[in-house]
Image 1 (spheres, rainbow, N blue to C red):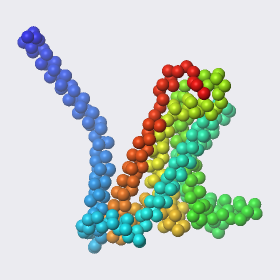
Image 2: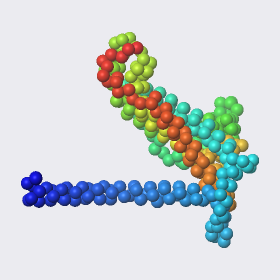
Image 3: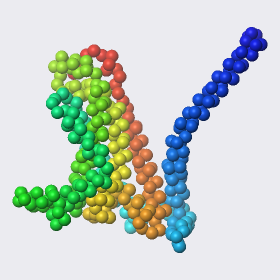
Image 4: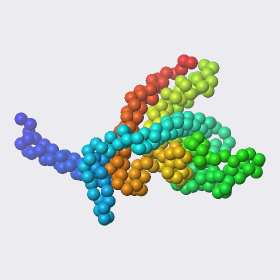
Length: 326
């Protein structure tokens, strides 16, 4: 028999240890409480409420909300009714999202690689690329609208084109031009991603880059054999975040166009859901169903990206090798 069991030392120690662990757990939950409460109240409850609403037809009568159970009729309307604009809206949204992600990731990576080199004025250029990302998107879009609107409304760019003898360009009313404008605006405001890539490039092993030079490798060999394997995890994270942000595009469409003009080409999914929720009457249940379908589509896209995550895993074996074979 353990002598400490007779004196009661061990049980007292266990009780104190358990009491201390309980206090730590309580303190941890108290610190996490704001985030937990915020998630439950501001995220989980609205999601469950919207799921409940998606099975109802919601109308406003005498200032009060009336809900009638209609089952899956909202979902049938979305996919089967010819008057539903969901298919076109989600199509233009996904086209924009995929093209925008490819442009942003490629552009940010190229700029980060250039700004990671040592040259005079490097810090100033880094600040120039980063500053547009701290300006609110609403203010940025208004400025771009003032610059690109037609000459009749005083658009500065078209005025300059006229002064140079060049025909004005309908940046905001042509279906192709307005998408080009949106892509350029996205590149204009992607300074945060550039900063993340620059910070990640600082983690690239310098001795491996020197080994490539000694073996007669060029800049492409350095990127392919050392830089890319090192930054793959961050590249994957930025890919996911950029995809989510692109699917949720809203402000640019609302400011630059009215009702998705021209020809509903900028009637993105978030714009349509807002329109059905707060502008059109009796369509809140339909908007909830649309929101849940978008949520499921987003989850599928994210799942596919995570499925291919293996190709974005960092190769830790590089650090164990002194020389890199070209």
